[in-house]
Length: 87
Image 1 (cartoon, one colour):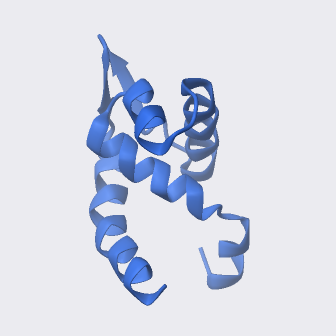
Image 2: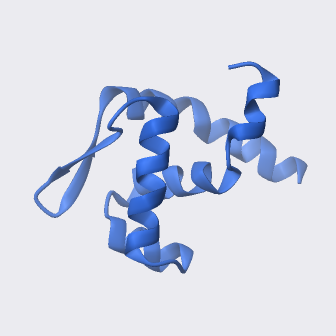
């Protein structure tokens, strides 16, 4: 993805993705970000489309990340820190 393509990425989705990877529970992420579980679910659907991967797969009450989700999370974490510090 080049920098011009970044226009179609909602930064809120990346914040939500990071929270999902940490919590691995849609309800807890909703509580943490002060949004409804259905909003989290809809955002996860958008993330899945953006990354063309299921990202998190339900396993009982938890969500298990796919290998692609783990890769994205590893790359995204430090970059989110940089963006946060810059802003």
